[in-house]
Image 1: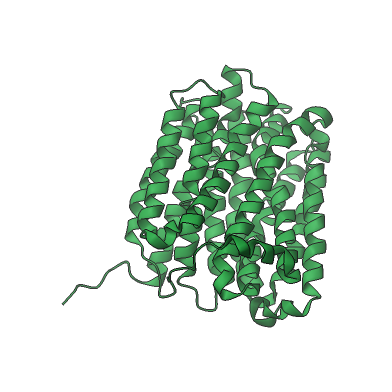
Image 2: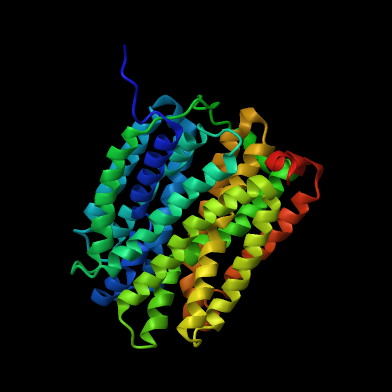
Length: 405
């Protein structure tokens, strides 16, 4: 008789999937977290500063499309594919340690890391979703929460002040990613883990031809316009804010960590609410709040910490809370045989947009200063609210969250 697998249950599997996601995805913002330290040892222009993060976004888009076209998540054991991606991302970070800070070669390692993470995040999402049974919004929210917490960790590494300087976020996140490669092998997929249909480029037209899918994708793009630009530049903003008050840099790193990390809790709460109250309701509320915070954050630059910190924490929760619900919406609206392709396209479009926004924002900041630093980001949520409101009014919205729209 075969001994039962102690890690075969849903809760155990989800625990290891989420933990592995958190550790592996700490690689993502290693460059953003290391930026103050990099600038202390070498002068970097706005292009190089932004490219340390936008290269990861671009690499992720390339990796996600290549993976989908060749069907790797269906041809390779998802756990092994996840582990491979985590190992490559870790190696890219380790190579960066030996390179000239902010150089083109370092930026290329960030591109490679992003491409490798395309084998981690979507594959982990697939593994988690395979356990779904009436709780899709919550499970997708769990994985986006893991992405959020992992993205926050490099800022915490900086705050440890262990004497590694800019190398700290790169080195520690590399070790974390290697740990993730081992942890993912302790989990397995659920009963819903089935081969997806081959990537179908012709399905791309459906993403825009179908009115409901088009609106869901436009809502997602409005959300992504703001999200990664905020995550990438909240660290420098926090450093500027606390430097103006002669505070230690560790306080700035802790602020950035808290602002990003608190979003993980918001993802879980929003997932539960969306399954019960409706996807459009949750996404519109989150974007309305996050857009308002984007306008206020810079304008409050001279406000005392007891006012600024709560605002930033609210922004950190609202900016990511709705993220999983756009994917859940497309999954519910799409023809079952096209779901995989349409989700891949949605992700690729969103992350391509984030690469542009992350790259452009420092030029705006150098022109407008910190008081208006994040104001352009509010345009995305405003557009997203409009798109999801239009979707809510359509009859197809009855497919969302069991009819809860």
